[in-house]
Amino acid sequence: SQTIHQWPATLVQPVGSPLSLECTVEGTSNPNLYWYRQAAGRGLQLLFYSVGIGQISSEVPQNLSASRPQDRQFILSSKKLLLSDSGFYLCASGGAINEQFFGPGTRLTVL
Amino acid sequence: KQEVTQIPAALSVPEGENLVLNCSFTDSAIYNLQWFRQDPGKGLTSLLLIQSSQREQTSGRLNASLDKSSGRSTLYIAASQPGDSATYLCAVRNTGRRALTFGSGTRLQVQP
Image (cartoon, rainbow over the protein chains, first blue to last red):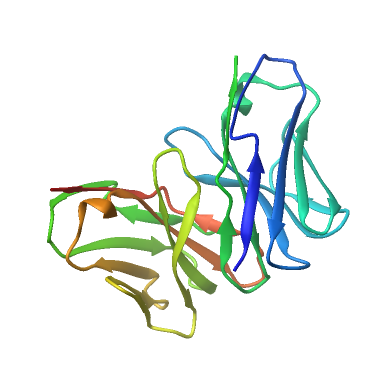
């Protein structure tokens, strides 16, 4: 089965600073990859998904960007963080029709 | 636009009880439905996946049913244990969409 790694586990950053969150996947090849955000008291919101290297689709306009430099690597970035970027970021992997598996998440606090 | 609702938002039961968590969705054109468990501060653990052509799936003490025409799914937990305490999330994948649409979850507390 798949294993999804995310780091860092927690991050505290000042407003206006850059961000880079990394996700890597083991146990599968050519997966669909996803970034979700879970804000306090709210459901999971899809931010980005990728069906292959260099292919990124965005669900909502925002301050963040994503990249997929390798088949099993997915990166979430920002040039300048906002307070509203605080939340719990989850990376997920899955085929187009199969189960989605989630990583352990990164807790981001923007001060 | 798909909307997923989970009722109740929170539930507290004594150990040993059987319980049912409910999930409803507005657009019945789904490809599959997935139930997850989330422990505080942790990622999501997949519990059960039901394809749109299936009526139910079972794993140990868990049984999930799907009634696509009425837009409903239930997660049945038999003989609940304190270790079952967590938030349970329902998510659907619509036909033609790659991502899941999540409900806001049911927070379950099983009292020893």
